[in-house]
Length: 196
Image (tube, one colour):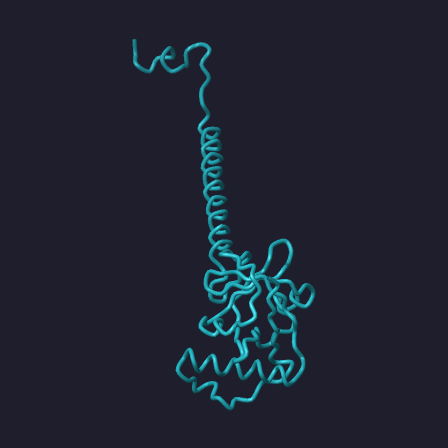
């Protein structure tokens, strides 16, 4: 019998031929499904890394982890040994946490400050709900934030900022000790009080 006879060219009875275009559509669907699962896994991993690690430099975070200190703090001068404080305020759907300048006066009062603060997410939240959490190194302190508007208190906070910058950096030519405090609209300061 000739190898290309009709008998050998047809499928045996009951067997279906697979259409090449149907198989490739199924394969494409499977590949897209695997890619979707991988992308979802990467998105979840990225979210968890951000959630547990940030705030990082200028990237905000969400929840501040660390040992919670419940005892009231009356002398915050140890905050001047930390370059930046991290503050967590209540926002929805997740809390909002950022790195901020913090500075303590010689008598132990603590202030947070920011430039061009009006309308920022954290400051808007702090004005609406002053309860917050402050992290210094790996310790978290429940605190209350109050924006200060009294010029004398703002001057004290500004002087504490300049002193801290010079102590940490060994002097800063960009901010000499006699640098005047910026205008009220340009520089905000919040008094930090222990809620413990």
